[in-house]
Image (cartoon, rainbow, N blue to C red; front, top):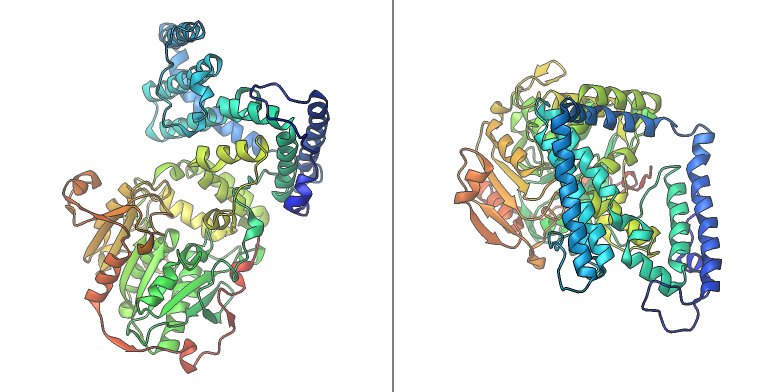
Length: 616
């Protein structure tokens, strides 16, 4: 992997900027400097190509992965194409519709170019890709934008109007068309993006030199695959300016570390709090900094907080299953909490797939004698039913799961970059193409942003665990249907009768609010469903001091989420205080603040521990 260079070193690869007024057109101010910078940009582009080819030539990465993905897309789209091509009249009708739109856009562009004051279509006003004024004011760019948008809508309509295509194939085709359209946006190409052309002229091409240099670095960092930089990673160090809430690792095993955080109040709630984060990402999303940390806030409310920090697995963990994560993760942590506090009952929180695992553990415990170890459960954007699980379900049909399993069999795990890419594709314009243009064409280094640093700090996934998750949840939906087996037990969520606080986020692309709401009905006890504004991360990490977004409570529990929303009460700000009130209505007894380890467990190291610092 190429070693990261400092900002100063990266700036040194460009020619010195001439001391001249910046041009106002798309013509370079100094052709000689521009020519030299173009040569350097091509040189840096060659380094990027070499970084891409090197691991393929040495066999470090599969050369056929792109071909496999392309084949999957073509196979899916062929079902749509077959419908339209099977009837010549239908094909001609679809083509005529598109060409009619092209003719209208072209005529409108000609009138605008002739100065009659005609405006282009305004359907891209809210589209951040076309925020630059020249996309509307310059007739050439306006026509280009409108042609692109019309073609994208036309392609989407072809998918929607194709009859006799099964729902899953249609959903996949819709997703692929959207990804192709996003990739082919004229804003993603230097020669058709007015902002990039203007920046190139103003800097005599220095932006492209910087951009190609960063591109080469990022391909090298991705070991042959492009790892788009979304933030300045050098600005953060775990344990120093991120994940800084004081605490200690009080226990660890092969799969996880258990962290206990220092009390900051004289008295604490008698019932401890155990947090089960996802292993798809790292736990410190709940402890980004002092202002955004749910962990720190919970400690300030008087909780004795314990958090599971999962190991970043490698080949040694290939056979670790959901059952291992439940027993060596949640059950192990419950024993640690009891030794440290003397309390057998805890309040538990599960985030994302950590919430799914928590639900599995609750159903497992409900079949045995230890069902009272967890007194209440809180789910942060977690699914227990996968009927409405959104676009991630597109990656979970039998054929694709088999491909993933073959890939994992070679390594013993799924590389973290694969899952990160899947998540980024759900919002590709915001999480991929925005940075592609800014980084590699405008030559701008992204600003430090703790949330995006966490987002890029990916983890690997054990083969057995991930295969079980894909098949039992996304493919077969076994948990909610009472078919999931863990060990010798068949799980039944209806036997989970403890109180559940079920939080969904309104704009969630990973655990859609409709899916989380639908899953509430499968628990056998009281469920408080709460909907918060924003998405999978920002909706959850919404501290009261920020006073952002809003949340909805007390809707109609029957029917679907739309019916629930009709009667729900909207509240301003964070849902965190609502959760705290709910917790205290269950048990508000307090005791003196506890020391870490309770005198029975010897701390192993300072929080956030060493497992969370393991890189892919």
